[in-house]
Length: 490
Ligand code: UD1
Ligand code: MG
Image (cartoon, rainbow, N blue to C red; front, side):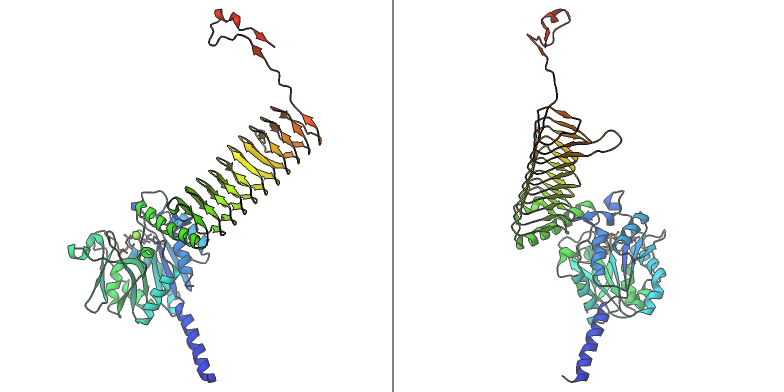
């Protein structure tokens, strides 16, 4: 290849990559969420462990827009705060009292129009109630917009049940003539199955002109952004790009749709893990957040929720009926019918059934936390076991110690929390109470029912004096007169 040709190829690649970047992305998040019937704005409801807004903003950031603007109004402070946490340099725009998606874009343009002039490349507009839409589909829309040389392009999809969506009305040449909302559509228009997804790409100059004269002359008395497409026809072609995967392009307006999309998404997540070598006995009752990481030969049994940044290593078994939140489960461990949060479970440890591990525990390899055991900030060293009905909080138990059933570390004096230290190879009798702060040495044995208030030396045996009282021939429910038989004998 000659040098100049090589240069040309290089040039066109640079142009392509420059061309693929957007001048701006306008994210609409100001709606009132009426149909959610919630104090929480719709875009802050979650799916797969992330808010709808977070998902949309992540997909948009994949296109690397020069400017990102997020339009807020309903619960605006909360939405703005969330948006800034996802994309710190996003420009937050407040929508005024005039409702509608068209008004939202007008408000955004008032803030960023000077930035549009300075750049080349189209502007993306996207609703934030379509949580499954991915960067690839947005990229394909942008590419189609450029290839077709359009003034504006709308992302559409075809749905068996298009109820609630704006319908795409095309002209004879296949271009988009207009979009008609469900509430404004006549019977013939309602029969159209191709719908508006609320994602658009506009040439900046067209967008500025087409949104100038919107009005609220419609059933909802709102400024519709969809009307801008009809106007855009005056400035060039208005095209449509049909999303290849209609499930990814569905929107959420109420909680029925939220549940529907959450389960579609979860099914895809489970299928991905199964293809990667994870056994999931019942994907319909197994919920896995996006950021969870599972190794091969992990087995997840029904009714399990794997949330946050949970990691499960090779061959571990989770479930049935288990919730893991930001937990790290090492290889070969088994967690059954339990809740585990911000806790590290070592190799081949055994947790459950019915164990409640609150944040801050470190359980080493071959440890056990059994039925009805609660732990918080407990460090349990290798091979130690807390098998039954116990509370271990703010405590360190060294290796190969066994804790008898019904044992409590009394860590709270009403004002402060205190630490319990139990050494290695200790045999803690049943029903012990460790009144913290207290330290028990290694090799200690404690008698059943001991109340350990003072430190215990290595290799000691400690027990508490509990006097036993017996009343012979006890008559239950005896009256005062008839109770003569109930004589106490020590
Ligand atoms: C909108 C489209 C409809 C499309 C559907 C796809 C219009 C007029 N209709 O209807 O054609 O089929 O999305 O899901 O655009 N928003 C604001 N400010 C507002 C109102 C809404 O920022 O004043 C935001 C919302 O927060 C939301 C998005 O715009 O993220 C869409 O609003 P929504 O009320 O859900 O519109 P739809 O009725 O679904
Ligand atoms: Mg919507």
